[in-house]
Length: 618
Image 1 (cartoon, rainbow, N blue to C red):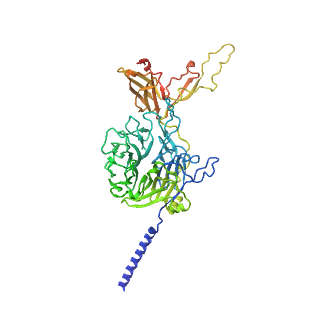
Image 2: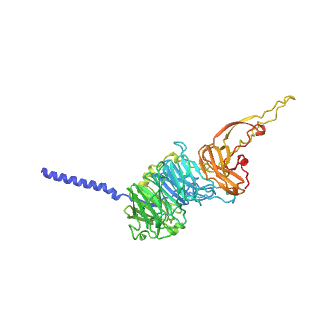
Image 3: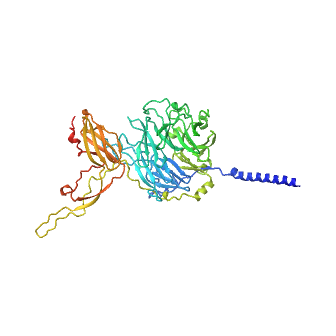
């Protein structure tokens, strides 16, 4: 009987285990599958007289969408006037809302530098004009905005805005990529440098200033950046006519930027498993994403055609081809003639989502195009391909919202798709939506609306050369003391003025044709010396970045094109200090200091002794 009881007990335990196993597996089997659906934010308050503008509409061209956490995301838009201004929107886990009505962009980028800190590639502001031709400067995607709380616990502000004068050899070029290795190590890349320079335009934020650090020797446009394992990877677009310092058999389409203190700073990424090898790669530039210890890159056919959708993956120190001619010889049939617009690695999985489009629509986006997304595993399996809006949404009356343009996945089963027409689709479950709604991001840093962008650092700041005229009424007629006039002395006033950027200017000619200009800088600044013969520029120094202190410039002059005018171009990179002075009212004729200080910006140097030492004739 005891043996029978043991058998019964064992059978009962086995049955309970089986039931427990089925019970634990049951929810997994019956777990709700994440689905895509349109989830467009409501429009902000409409301008006066615009009816129905609070209903959801396209946000305009969205250049980028990036998440710091599932309940903290950003997108940057060119706007959809008059209802949607160009600017930045934030997702708090429940809904999208306007975060900034400044720093929008034609095709902007976003780079997270910390939980409450990020950068945007933004459009410039009008105002500069070429003094010689009257031309207006390019403004698209060639400035930077730095968002952060100015103090712990305060709301976000644009704490820094960076631009550069147009129509110069070192003017900012349009930027297409942005990424941060850390809060004090952010990079921004874009178009090739203008002729005759060779290289790709790059800016680097080192924690205190933005400096130009071009990618050397290769004039290929930088198109994408993504951080991975403490480095920043950037992809480039290879185009006919790109200027290089020397021809290479293998042109690297992917670079590594090492963190500060690691040399060399730039390294080419070699041995990528691409169709035809890198030297004859028929693909478009690589779109980048990373998650779960793997860096992914994807591209479709390039402008010349002949390529197929290719996905490669870097994990455990090696690159492998996930999709492409090596793994799918008939890969053209997998996605037809689609091109890759974006890629997003899905956290918690070994898979990625691709945003796909046709070549014709990529050139000329159609408002009636439908969005196509594909889910691909690391083994090269096509998990899912879907067209949006879904069949159910179309039956419910949802019209096409444009082709897929950008995609981001902050968590497993949680992705956002942006269309070319500025509409958003969200991949998630109803349970996840309810969970997000119950725990929204309540960080006060993202609570307010940012409407102010400070003056651009890097553009000339022209403080007055002298204090403004005094109109306080202190200067009056001397009182009449019964026929004897006391000697009237001009009163003095105490005022706070900005110190000049440049002081102690001295110059000399050495070796008969080299001008040496010495000067003192009050703050860190960019400085260049120009020599003109009438209206023609005949000599100039490169734009140098100097720390505050005593500095000098050397300029080689050509005796056959002797200058008739010298100008010094300066751009302070920090606020000028202020000084408190006591001055006699009325200027030099009354004992005042006058206006002999030199302002910043572009100015002629009439006070510099060079005119006494050089005979400005050929």
